[in-house]
Image 1: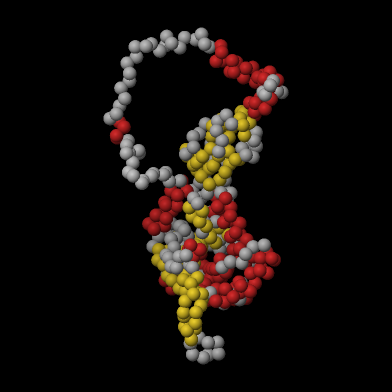
Image 2: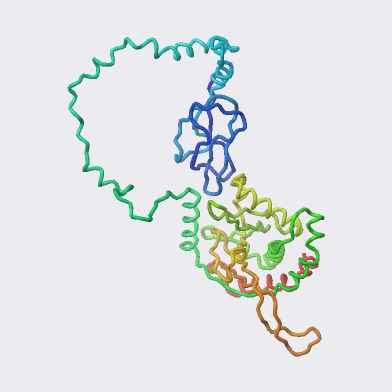
Length: 387
């Protein structure tokens, strides 16, 4: 019996995608749960497993655009049973539990032997003039130049890369983005990490990084300035009560932004665990599209690649994004605790940037938000006192 293979629902917000590749070919025997094909959506690439064991028939070519519920192939469970028992005993294989379907399968196998007398030759008379090739059409094809330039190769963009490109252009054209900068003295948070990182990892099974401090600080700052956590929808302003923080993750297929839901309710350990889990699954292609949708504010860390300063692009339709950068030791003027004169000291410093939609957020609010994040990270104990 043949069972249809349909495109599964991979999230409430996803209705279509690209069947980017088949991991098996027609005629292959596949087992239930085995990886069958890759479905590429505008948010992630999901590997779809075989719904049952059987012989695969593919009806939709790779690269085709498909919709949820669309039939893309079939699995024949009877053929799989026949194939499993056909070694050394063909008649028994055909008769496994179902004599009725066995009848059509036998003639099909015998069809080539029963039709050698069919007269294909009279239907194809010899004096057929050769069809003239139309060389005039060849040069007119814009897709493949006759001669490629040396050192050049052309690769089709994936649907994820196309979507990333479209979203970035949309962010530029649909918002009035502006960036404000500040710098953070990372001395205290660095000392805190160095002092407790081993105990933290033993207790929670995850490393204590810098991201959790910035996520926590952003949640507190968003609570004080909710307009930064809002977005524009038509002629309305949509305020979000909960901070659902997107954290940018670089994968081999491009940049994706998994979302930490209700980040303000999480501890540092829970935030670090969520970031590690989402990043791992984003790179392994096991993250679900719903986990990449619905963020209200994003954080990107170009510092992991050595970026000293940058202007991050909005994750549209969000109205703001925080950019972290590499930590660099440099001299700064620092006031002594006892009120003595300032002194020049070497401190681990990080530039931070906030890109915001100026249609919604005024400069005062953007600068105040970033300054608040700076204050909280520079004195990390306040993250626990004020949370």
